[in-house]
Amino acid sequence: MKYKQIKDREMHRIVATAIIHKNGKYLITKRSMDKKVYPGKWTVPGGGLAIDDYVNEKPNDDGCWYFSLEKSLRREIKEEVNLEVGKIDFLLDLCFIRPDNTPVITLSFYAPYKKGKVVLSDEDVDFAWTTLAEIKNYDLISGIKEEIYTADDIINGREFKNYFI
Image (cartoon, one colour):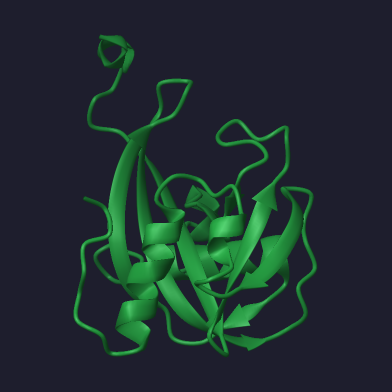
């Protein structure tokens, strides 16, 4: 089994993603073809937590930094799509192994659009504000559509439905 090649079985790359919603639509972006994981696929903004997201800030008395993942996600959203979002809420978590055998924990969040005009970084080549009905027209990373459906249920006060089974 290829997963035995993972050297440190307790270390993971931490990634956060944001399902940004505005007026019943959801922001998706198309990854550039030179990305390590899922090149050319449609996804939602996000990225990895970096040590620099917190070590240059003052920790509390016990040496802990709070809200580092949220700060990192807000930074990634600003860098990737030039937007600011409102309150960020947790949606779900998932794990996968990258092609280079790096274990990844992804924490998926959802947040309302606050302000800004979409301007893409070099990481992405296109974007769309899509409705649930339109989303089937995009070649999304597996699971993103279901995450958006789940977020839409929560945002609109509908009962939880497991779209992942």
